[in-house]
Image 1 (cartoon, rainbow, N blue to C red):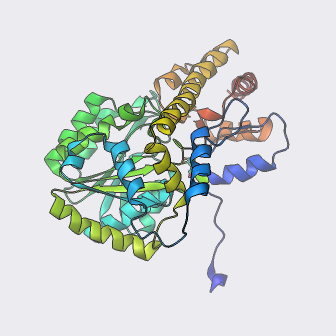
Image 2 (cartoon, rainbow, N blue to C red; image 1 turned 90 degrees about the vertical axis):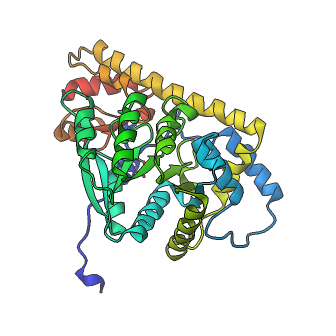
Length: 395
Ligand code: LMR
């Protein structure tokens, strides 16, 4: 059976991790995978997570099955984090299940959409997270793209996006990034969300919102403002969220899929299908990460500590955006990189060629995705001079 297989190349994002680890250059810089790092290049466990973990150790008294939906308390807290005091919650039109990470949330969403309509089409931004296309296709969806990032002018191609969305059919799904667009860092402003909302409402396509970075853009509520606006105006919607980045729970694999329906009766029917989707993929989600998140979100003290730690991560990344732009100027680079300061979240495209990306890797041990997507969190005061000098050399 296995004899017919052909070896596949390493994943364009995860493959960089292995290469980076093997590199013995003490000056190496990891701007690859979207993982938060502190000034020392370390991805520490959040203090609020440490406390929640101790509490969990002291109080957990069973390892019995949790069921396909995951922990009800986690699901409840997550839906409040996503929607605040939104009417979809008071109208009882939302249902959330815990999932194995954000990728699990997306896969569950994809399988659910397939249950609604076999072979459905989902539109994704061009560009989008490298795993979106493969993940949706693996679930049997057809993937099409709408214009999003204007590489030439380093800005949003909003006219192109809107024009393409107007051609989408009512039976299709459209994937939108809630905030911190991965890979471009280019987000919709509230006025643009309004226009997208109007198109979604007019056509009636299913919005699927991927929120992997809530709190990394401007703030927890601010980052969810676009999807809340959308939820005010459409009858059905899917939200996939992740606790990997904002709680730093990467390896615990905890995220959530939330579906919104026309009424509480309609959503109960949809929810029964969602649970059957979960059952045949992985039966039930891992419980540990969810227990930590629910402990933090349901304690005033831990929640406020989390807000503080999240703000620290966000502010450091935003600070890095200005620092790298200034350092490039200081190193005589004439090309305008100021667009980096107008983008949000973990990523921006540097906007250099794949050959230049490769040179950065081969000659300077600087690792970023081939598209020149760089993880801004990997920049630190200790490496930014070397980084700017290296970029100046390959330019
Ligand atoms: C990324 O885009 O780097 C992260 O979301 C990690 C991943 O799984 O690709």
